[in-house]
Image 1 (cartoon, rainbow, N blue to C red):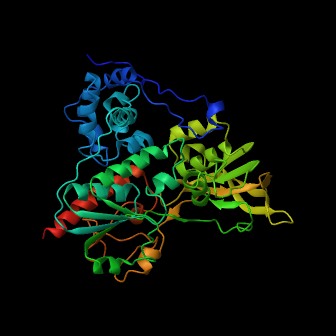
Image 2 (tube, rainbow, N blue to C red):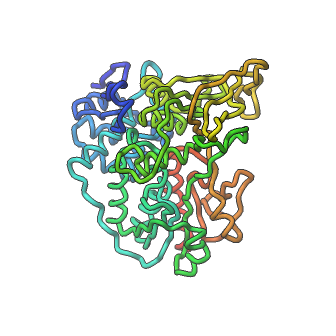
Length: 460
């Protein structure tokens, strides 16, 4: 009989006052008893809408049924039949706007905690079995994957399972892409990402780091080396700025730089080689998940005051509600309906404040969201010594500028057809390099689609 409790089984978490000063994982995960209890809330629908909402089509009711039975190994095998990275997606996927928002239990109460159960299953398997996948016999056909983030990892895994000889090229010194440089340790422990890379290597994927494609090697040179197809999953790492006075001052960061120094270079540890400013008061400009990550990192790095400065209202913030909730619990102050107009510096060239103006929401713009409008005479100074710009990112132009025949749209995103092939034959692309900054799970879905398209292309 189904568990008809209207609310999700609560997720154990670190106390906000304690976690706000450490980089250990915030959410502690379900126990087996909690997972079985929550799995009992699933109605095992014959036509599960939740699966339709999943970009990688996880067989959700099937794996949850196995969790309810206590057969966690079988649950893991069901999930990984379509999702190669459940420990990652279970943590950072916006389930509330995808699978869980389709759950019928959400009509009268809260939906089933699909993401929490997926995370539990993946963690249980890693902690109790963690068997490395077997390498499939190679067909001798070489395929290059550019980028080792969620799109590249998924494409590489699927191609390796099909027998291709896959090489994954990563520009940085550690594989994992945005999973290691962008998402903080307290949301996604890096040991989990490293374990997934080990699984790829067990499948026969060669992982090459410090390989900036477009500088060390070009796409043309990859083909000359015998690669028969290339999948570009290089992400969107080029930060945007506001072009307001003071953005060149010492103490102004892009969110990408701040998070890379913190996460990949581990600036929060005493033995770290990379420096980072130990701020007293930090303003993070933006309202997305990256802004929440940057703000929460700044608090953990010792800031006394951290502000989220966002030009629209809280209801319009694109960040996940869970991330907003956690940020508030940790003492981060939200200054909504505010927009910076200048960053102020002292005689040494350091940030000493940020001039803002208050906003109100006017008529909807082309996207349907109400346009923020300045309120004349409402300027004020926010007393900060560090400003982090989290206004979005676009794809780095390096690959397109060094690859003849590769076309992009006006935002610099690669143009692909319905099979994810770019305007250059044999070159496929997916994830943020095509869509602009989006979610991990959408990038994973693009990686799956790209791998299938490459397989079809090479079998012609």
